[in-house]
Amino acid sequence: MPPRKRFRQKGFTPSPAARSGPPPGGSFWIYGHHAVTAALGNPLRNIRRLLAVETEMSRLTSHLLGGRAAERTDPTALAAFLPQGAVHQGVAALVDPLPMVDLAELLEDLPPDAPDGTHAHRLLLLDQVTDPQNVGAILRSAAALGAAGVILTERHAAPESGSLAKAASGALDVLPLVRVVNLSRAIEALKQEGFWCLGLAAEGEMTLAEAKPTGRIALVLGAEGTGLRRLTREHCDQLVRLPTQGPIDQLNVSNAAAIALYELARDISGAARPT
Image 1 (cartoon, rainbow, N blue to C red):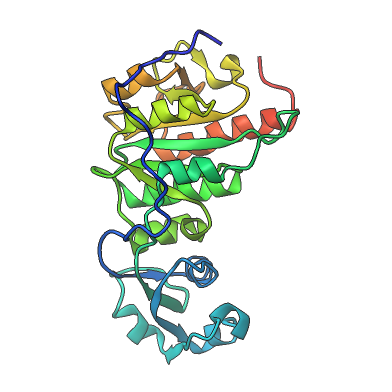
Image 2 (image 1 turned 120 degrees about the vertical axis):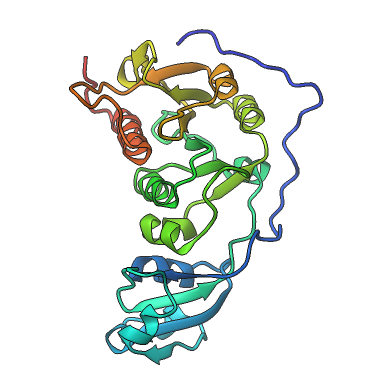
């Protein structure tokens, strides 16, 4: 690996843990079986109302409900609470946003890395990704491929919403989602905790596979079209790319995240890397 870039920011330290930080925004409807059942299983999620059609009532076991009452309804009445065309699968819940998670809290709660490197932590940082479907899909891939959390900017980023929760397919309630004021400072905080910060960019000099990163890895992805901002690029240890080719040489940001996480996951598993 090339020498690590260091940007010492005077007086910067990660903010204290904020386990009970107030959630931003007001309540909203989430819908779909996986999104709702994950919310029911999350002790940090405040559920104000739960609606289900007849066929879904039997799937909401007493253990899952945890003392909550589900209101029986019909598909037409349920759809009236949701955005037009929402695929609700017969169940929806009115929820409050999750309490805010602090970056220092996320880092403090990470278990120790395995000595053999088979369980080094992976994090995703999203540089002003505003599409809730993309953020939801990234959360789903991150949860499925073993990432420890996803970090967003507080401004110019998708808020919690029903469409984000649906695209995440339950991952919103099982994977930490951290929002930071300054992404560059967050990158520096991760470096202090031993993370190698890789920015995904089409102009990267080598592919992710060629870079052969090891240990704790933080992948930094930018919004479609604009990509990584200049300051974000400068704070990354290295820019890498995915080996795209053909008439379309750029991937959707959620697809790029999934492929990059898979590349890192299969490297940990000991599978042969491409040359």
